[in-house]
Length: 317
Image 1 (spheres, rainbow, N blue to C red):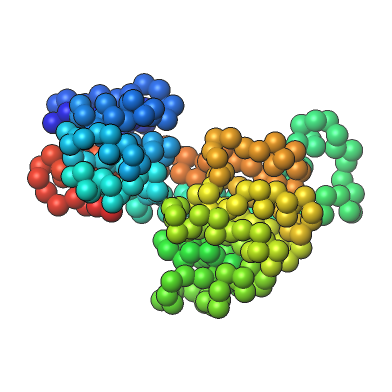
Image 2 (image 1 turned 180 degrees about the horizontal axis):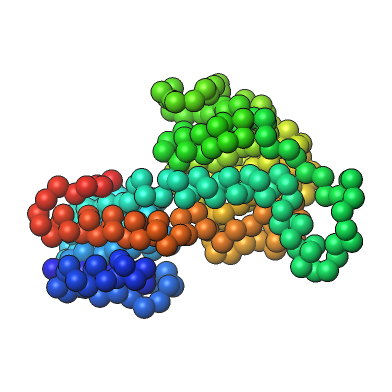
């Protein structure tokens, strides 16, 4: 079968792909796929390994017209960039890479919580600019994270991993919203609704999947419900947070700060966010470690191998 991998991968993943599959092509650029490339991928390859930003929409499948491709083995747990229903209707299976990303993404959430609360980004910029004049008792006072209350929006694998770190590592009380009660190995209270959660916590952490159901889930009403001392943390998908409403809340001081690893129109980051000192901005580092990216790549290749062998797909979505 003819296989196309849409981005350069780690050395270990590329070596496995070339050793295990007879006809594999690895694209050499990190740019997102153009419409022309996506249509060619569906027409010329049996299996495609796309990544975040490769928007296989219903319109793309409609234009493809009986595609040769029968599997999109997505590199990543999130697949809101792929219209799964349209893919299935066109006879294309979709898989993802769950599990491999959980701990790394939770670690980035903790990084953002601490950086936002303790003004770490602002402090580093001060030192690098030569503006630090020495320690004093009221220098850059931030929010003490230990013992505070964290609210988890979406208590799936990643949400639970974040909550464990907050509870066991920092003695935080945990509240959450989810579609149903969760059986957890740590104490946590399920909030009545999102507004109640937003108003009760010191850190509101977004950990839900992207897609139409969660578009602008964090909007002006939710931000207005938050404490003026609270921080918003987003490690989910950028479009879950209404960026214009977040900018307004930060500019007005209705929330104390934000830590963001993802953006609504990624990779574009509004200048208003860049200009604010009380916002921590990371370039989508959630899973950016050698081990995790290799694990993700190998999981994608496991799905490819199963398809080639005619076996059950391990991670069908």
